[in-house]
Every structure is written in structure tokens, then in C-alpha cells.
Image (cartoon, rainbow, N blue to C red; front, top):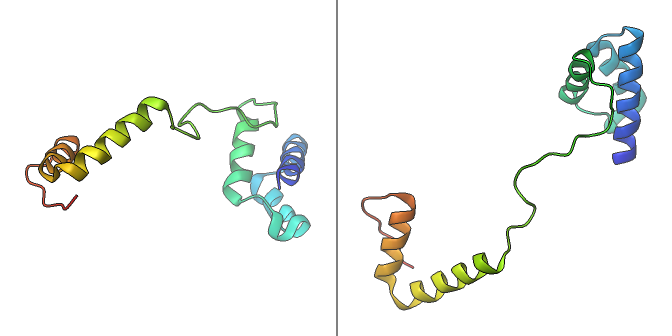
Length: 109
């Protein structure tokens, strides 16, 4: 689907440069691409980006949540929590209550 998306982004920029509007472009895309068409929101989003001066049709890299948060420290904390909670259920209740700032907690750990 990535190649198809790239092709459609190229076509969106082409239609934008010809002076077509987003709605007409989306309608033409529905005819041309059928079920593989970009969403209406994506087509309108790309039109907006091009109208604001964007030239590139490549996706910009985004910072954000990592795809994985498995670090040694995280793993050790989880193992420690799991062991401690299995031994001392009152400690588990207190710890979870403190994490979520709850006054009273009725959980079975």
C-alpha cells in the first residue's frame, strides 16, 4: 500500500498545481483507485499542506513514542514489582494506589 500511497500523493500535488480543489480530486481518486483510495481526510490534509507551501511528498519523520520500551531497567522494575506483589499483596495495593493517586484500592494482586 505504501507505493500506492506515494503514487496518490504525487497525483494530489499534480492536481493541486493544476488548480483543482480537494473535493474534486478526492472524487476522481475514488473512481481511479476504488477501495485503495486514500481517505478523504488524507487528501484534504495533503491539499492543505501544499497550499501552505509544502513541496515534498515524502512523509516527515515524527518523534514520539518509541515502538518498543523494553529496556533492562524497565524489565528489572517489572520483575521486581511482580515478585514483590506476589509475596506481599498489601504492598501491591499500596504501590498501585500511590501510582494512580487513589485513596482506597480494593484489588487482589
